[in-house]
Length: 293
Image 1 (cartoon, helix red, strand yellow):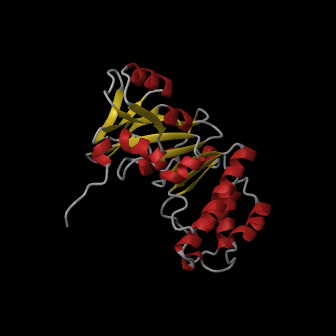
Image 2: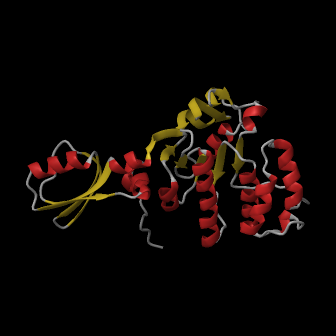
């Protein structure tokens, strides 16, 4: 389990993380989402031991991550901005990774040439952005990490390669119990692969739970008639007689409350992760605004 408890991180007068608590269960795929500037990248740098927290505790299976080489050998990270040595080829980066990660799998590295089909001896800096991202996956998967941390992992990849990468990652989760933490703005994609989701804003964790619980606890209610009292309404919009509400609670609880006021019509619909994200962050304040140009 990768655990962050009551972590605060400041840069001068700016507070990037404010008493943040986050728990990534072992063997799960955890999606970390939030608006730009929420503190996701700072959280990732703390979880991987790049930054030291000002206060709080960051551990992997109870052991501290910061300045702990043995623990860091079990964590591999693909950041949004990928680094390679200026003149290095993929083969040369393989030797570098082998010196850091004792479990680096040479046989798997050779097999993945059939998947990514990257030039062995060309300088990586001459690759396209998408090819550089593929090289990062080629190397990182071969480290056989216990924890794989990904920041906007498939940005720049074509649709076929995106599917290939997710297939490799999910196979690793299924076969080895790898823990995967993904920070991404592509909520539709996260919805297909994540077990757990954490929603951040302004350096704080607004909500974290399993995706099934999250989607089972927030619904879209459409009705014609009176809105019952006692519902936890996150947002409401009206179109003629039809009212559309975003409501927190179970389907049974919502249905019972609405049925009691005998509306002319009502329906309860599931929400996507993207819709939950919007309404947890304040509903109308995060909707697209129509501006006359």
